[in-house]
Length: 137
Image 1 (cartoon, one colour):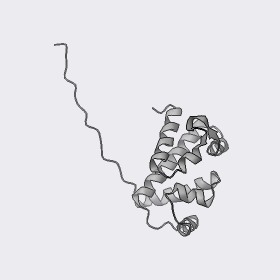
Image 2: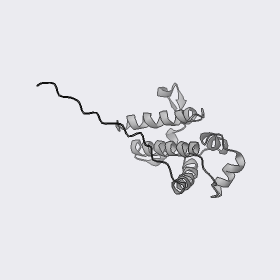
Image 3: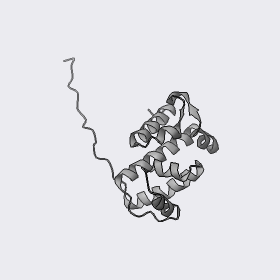
Image 4: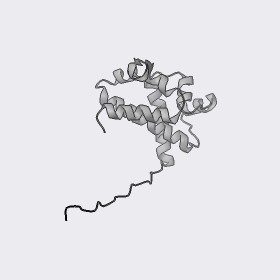
């Protein structure tokens, strides 16, 4: 018989949750990343989903409090973006500067402008684009 049945492999739909300890580490790392990217407080708060100025000030002081799923996801995407840039640019400073440079791929917006539109999907799209650029797919 020439035709063989195809064995169906079910997709793993279980996404591992980010633990509280991991979320706290993400928050500390995000604060440091935003320093490296030279973000203003307003830009940082926007990337974190419209965080209040008071909460952002506490974060910079190391007091993160409860971090909801949306914020955990945003930070995970931001770390993925950072990772992609570190793979693409040998010199970290070039990757940090790239965030603000206009890019024809994004309709002459910078990656930062794209991310500042405020949607998690914007962060995910940039992360996916960087992964594709570095040949991860």
